Figure 1 (cartoon, one colour):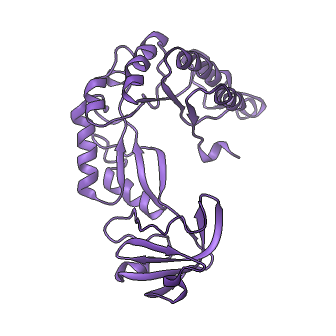
Figure 2 (cartoon, one colour):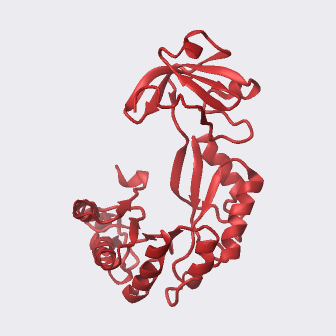
Figure 3 (cartoon, rainbow, N blue to C red):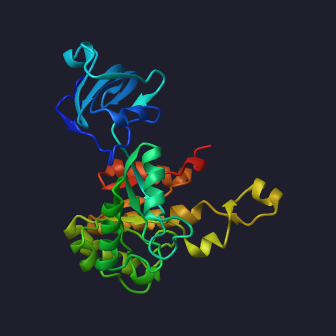
Length: 293
């Protein structure tokens, strides 16, 4: 891709007039405008350029594109701001249905678009958990009703996230769910997880694991070491995470199912993922910001 990779009339991801970057809210009121002087994120890295938008469609990105150079539409100063495609958050807790006092699809969607996210994956640990098709459709329908960003439902791996039997994977896949997780709870039964993988690999499904061996975790609250001892807090051994990841990668080799490590937090997990990628396994991971410092 070159510096004009946007210039094929790429539709904007925002809904109901939300701006394409924080600080450019004035663009809501006009149908034809130029975001001038911002740093544009492209596949080849950031560039300094202007962006011409007409009727919520990106027409061109400069420098050098005539519509931008000729000053089409109202110019909005974006100096010091970053402009890019809508971001995707792979791990959100919207708590709807059942726990709306914590968060709901509308409030979570508003927070998402305020931060530049146009698509978010909603975890299934609601009340009731998203373990059947009609519950997944509720999340999709409610997202469409709110209309601020794409809320993509994930489904449980096990029924009620209890770890004893599989969720209604057939209903969930029929409802369009492709990411499955018992987020917050590890699927400790390797045989049960293998069955889920064998079913989902034929349906383009992905397993996202909360990797934490319950026996090794022992109710810990922070990394096990000198600091946890000094604070008098129960420590959590890094091996509680790596043990599950290593086991699950064996199941990935057996089944070929796509696998994702949720909130990876240890150097050992990073090493396992790196080795798995070099091996060609379909493995990805995410990290929480507070684990980077």
